[in-house]
Length: 351
Image (cartoon, rainbow, N blue to C red; front, top):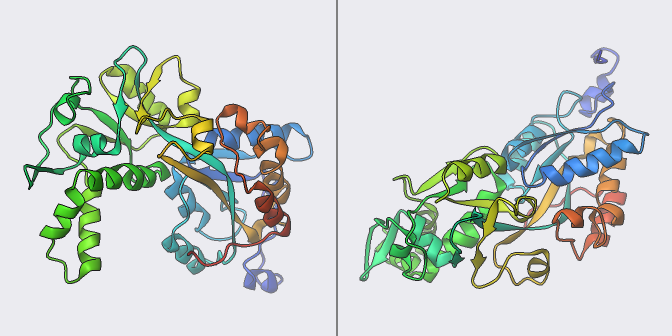
């Protein structure tokens, strides 16, 4: 495809406003592997309507998608970043430094983070304390902070299977990792007493510094092979489990629900993950899903406004919409999101 090029002498006003004329007629989207299947479904349905081409939707992870969004404004940059974690102030600062001054935050619904193993393996009844006890680099034993030497799940909790510890966790670029750290590792660290022990042992200058040091220790997983980071998407984690039936993997609920013939899901705090338990707030490891829109591209890249409106429509994201059939937990405040999209409201400062 030939692309129109800016001529600085004749398009100075456009250049100053960082908006470029464009011949690109296909939306470019990248980011979260969790949001990827939902965005693909929407993109295909959007393309089938015939007015605009089917958007190009790629993965790469939430952090990588936001980084691409913030590279600048223009037809050679993406229009939307999918994200399974909320944008960070550092992302917003990078965007602003590169001329991306207005970003629309669109929350599409909710998803659960689940722990699943081989379909033919034993049942797992887990808690955040169990997972921290299995994966934390340091644990508390007999009142002392010691290196974690647990070899099997039964070493962590006698009620768990006497199966070697091997857990595939999301790499740091994935939005799922942030949820895993805060809602599993940190909560488990506190439940086992490790957090308080880390605070007590901290040499931080004040309470805030001690709390940060303790939290960082809670987030630190062991490096002896029991915990393995996966930089790819959930399909890579699934293939790793297929090759090692003793492993447990971290997945999004929707991915698990599309692979129930291969995976067995664990309960968390006695709650089975499902659309119902997440929508009721019962399942403890859940998170909102987002995408972020480069507002400067609306009206420049054909179909952008139409796509985001289509994505959050009742037919797609509503309780009886197409995405709910594939595991998306509908947002009870969807109407407010729809109104914000219609008004093209950019996000304000982070709380």
